[in-house]
Amino acid sequence: MIRVYFNPDYTLGFPLTGEEVKIENLQHIADVDASDLREAFEICQNEDLPWVSRAEVTPDPLVADGTRSVAPGDVLELDGEWYLVGPADFQRI
Image (tube, one colour):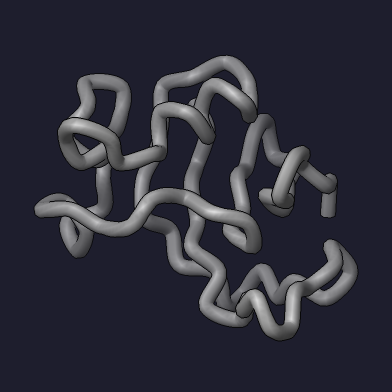
């Protein structure tokens, strides 16, 4: 299972590095039944249906009716390790 967090501190105008992410500010929005980060990221994209309605996703009640896709700056947690979503990869933080 991978835990998904939105990062309210991240903006495109001021992107963060892993050292600057404040874990205490992250907003847990869902748990995803996936075995790796790339798979979880792909599941967390809005396409034909909101991603929070997929069978693999257990959304937080605040986003159960829909929310934005996971994007660079957001954070995924896998096996107790935290990863910043980047434009093309994941940075361990």
